[in-house]
Image (tube, rainbow, N blue to C red; front, top):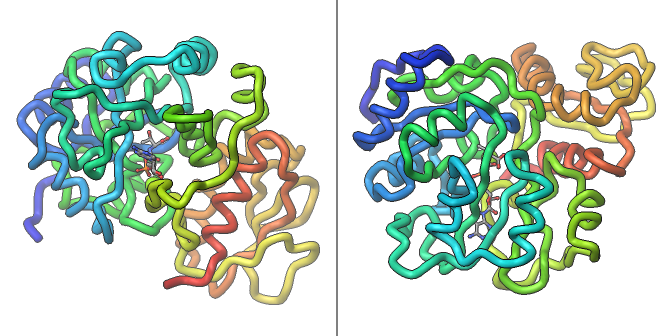
Amino acid sequence: MRNIDTQILAEDDAGIAAAVEILGSGGLVSFATETVYGLGADATNDKAVARIFEAKGRPQFNPLIAHVADIAMAKEFVEWTEEAEKLAEFFWPGPMSMVLPLKKNSGISPLVTAGHSSLAIRLPAHTVAQQMLTKLGKPVAAPSANISGKISPTTAAHVLADLDGKIEAVLDGGKCDVGLESTIIGLINKPTLFRPGGIPIEDIEGALGNRLNLETSPDTLVAPGQMSSHYAPGASVRLNADGWRYGELRLGFGPVACDLNLSETGDLIEAAANLFHHLHTLDARDGKSIAVSPIPNSGLGAAINDRLERAAAPRP
Ligand code: TXA
Ligand code: MG
């Protein structure tokens, strides 16, 4: 594969302008969002989107989320519904993506939707991402900016560890606040949870005024975040550890003695923000196994446990 000189762009006007220039000419820019760093390309440019898959080493062409600058831009590309309006009102900008019917002749590359007639769309809250999207004036397709199957990046350094030499630039926006990918809600038929994430399921149900469909139908798209083994560190992962075993790297939650603590006070928001960061740090210690304290399954705990179960799953 070709080796590119990857630029690190600061989160100032010059950095954002450079990122927009690169995206506009078909290049790849990893950019900070409030969830994780995205690996962005102009969503209307087939070649640029194809390069995302090459850079990530993705096994298949899975559908990507299109990031937009505002609701008006979202409406240009998808059929808006009453439920979409409600969820956008409550949770945008923020860590929630909606899958909606793609408009005809939308101009979105079919690689973004994996050829399907629906599009996942998100309005991120990070100001750097917002400025970049507003200046570009086009949607940006972006999966998480990691090599396929590895831990999602929450700093520019994580991105470079995986993608240095494979992309044109990283737009550094500091450490991601939420630290977990967006919650994905399907709005094609009955509102359906496609992926737990940065907005708790209970909050989405509260906004919609009804329960989400949790069943995955046979034709639900299978994408990397939904593969049983994903977010995998080099070490094996042992969950729900009530005590530690000799030689384990210890990832704690609550008031326990450990190597790194997701949240000493048992705060799930703090734990979510630290999750990928701590996994990266422990992974760099080259241990054989990482043990993780039990984590309650309420609120953001559902998304944290989802990611941990995938990190612990048998590797293909
Ligand atoms: O927080 C996030 O969502 C991050 C940041 C960068 O925005 N992005 C992210 O993208 O996590 P990625 O590619 O790692 O995950 C995309 C997910 C897939 O799991 C897939 O299931 C879902 O989006 N998806 C995309 N398009 C879809 C579609 N048309 N129908 C159903 N699911 C879709
Ligand atoms: Mg990902």
